[in-house]
Structure formats: C-alpha cells, structure tokens
Length: 261
Length: 76
Image 1 (spheres, helix red, strand yellow):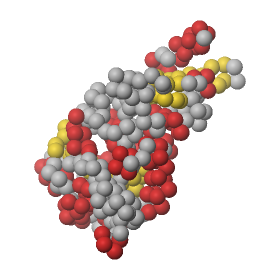
Image 2 (image 1 turned 180 degrees about the vertical axis):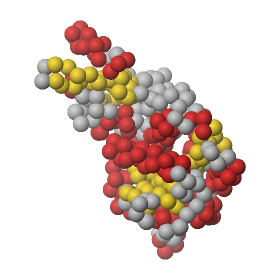
Image 3 (image 1 turned 180 degrees about the horizontal axis):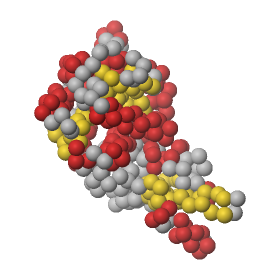
Image 4 (image 1 turned 90 degrees about the horizontal axis):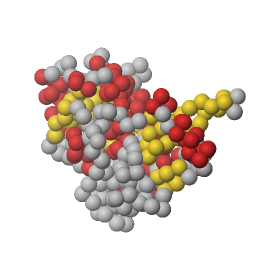
C-alpha cells in the first residue's frame, strides 16, 4: 500500500497535469442537476475562449431557462436577455461593438418556442454572431413540460401519454430550418454525452468563433443534450436514451459549412 | 518499453455523484464511493488506480469539471 501511495504521489505532480478546469470558469459550483450537459458546454465554451485568448473581447448572452445563471459561472462579460430575445440583444451588441465576439447560449424552449421569430430573422439577416443551442427536448427548468423539440410519443409532464402528433403537432427541427437561410455560414449539430462527441463539439465551437472573426455570417451550433430530471431517468440511463432516441431523429454532423453550402 | 500511467484527482466536495464518468472509462477505474460529501452526494473515486492511463475520457464528460488528470510515462 505504501509503495502504491508513493507511486501515486510521484504521478500527481504539476508537470504531469494534463487536464484541469479552465480558469475562465469561476469557482462557484454549477447549480445544474447531476449529469446535466450544460456544465460540459459551459466548460467547452470557456476552454475555447481561453485558447483563442479573447476573454476581454467576448460578450455572452444568457437566456431564460436552466442556464439563466450562466453569468455566475463564465468569467467574461455577459448580459441577460428577456425570454427568447437573446439573438435580438446579440444583434444590437454586435452592431454597436463590431470588434467584440458575441455569442448567445439558449435552450430549446427559449430558442425554438418563444424566440422563434428572433432566431429565424437574425439567421436570415446573417448577423455576425454565434448561437449555441442546447436541445434536450423538454422545458427542464419549469418542470419537464413539452417543448417544440419533444419527440413523437415522448413523455413529458404535459404529455403523460407521450406526444400525440395529431393533437400537438410535429417536433421542430429548427437547425435544418436555419441551415436553408442564406445568412447562416456554419450550421452543425453535436452532442456532449461521450468523449468523442465532446472533442468534436469543442472543434465546432472554435470554428464558429473563427468564422465570426472573418465576418462570414451567423454560426449556429445545436448541441443535443440530456435532461435526466425532466426525463425521470438516472444520468447514465438518460445518456443511453439520448443515444437510442434523440440521435436517430436529430442526426449529428455539419449541415452547412462555408466550404460546402 | 515505455508505458503511460495516470491518476485522477476528484474534487470530492464539488462532485455530484452523477456517475457519467464510470461507463466512459475504458479500464473500469472509477466507482462511486460509499461515503458521501457534505452535500450528501456519493463522490467518484479511483477503485483501481493502477489501470488508469490518463486518457481524460472521464474529465471530458464530467459536467462539473471536478476531475483533474495527471499522466506520466514510466519504464517497465
């Protein structure tokens, strides 16, 4: 046991450190439920901003939803928007301060329900901003009600027998919708429940900020995430459910890149 | 032959015991502890530290960024 202890102490040294929490995340503990994908996306965003060294030049827009308190965790300039209005606010900030990097961080209820008009029109105008869209198919913060992105036959607190398409309409693939608009330059769908997907998502976020610097138009990143509290599952079961049910309907990959339109 | 070995350090007070790190570990190193932290969560710990290669899979998926990863090359 002593030998093992000595070996462990030999490995745990500053020069061997390969992964640590980025300094751009504050020390405050996330208020998110255990296993929630929000934390990973927060971390990836801050890692990208740290790597591009644009902490002083970035302005984030926090939405209404679970991530309403995102400005407590991200050590950058942030502004809170009214429900769904983050792209409108980002438009104003980017037009008055064009040298800043502006991103919005929105959930599916915020972006695809109450904020549909703002989303569609900012994408159509081709505002030079980045939209990070977290899709978990449910209104997580208010108690797991049906969202526009809720899958067919998926149970939520307002659809206890599953979403009936005849009565409640079809799930909305807003990412496919905005990919058709001429103002968007980069539209992609990623996930964060497995290490490989996390790496890809980070690359996508980095690309989006680079395109913003080159003033190429709006970049839209959808991240399919889980809501284990809303789905009434354990975190690992929720991730499995996501893989088996969400991903076939919301396939991952780039929908539009500046190279291939 | 050189071999890599790793260790993780979990911030036990901040860990929420979601267990997302457990299935992504290729060497089955992590387990939730029987003990719990001041918030009542069973935190993650290394049950089998010798098998760790410091691949960072657990740290990449950790939603609360509580895992630090150390990696070192050792001669066998």
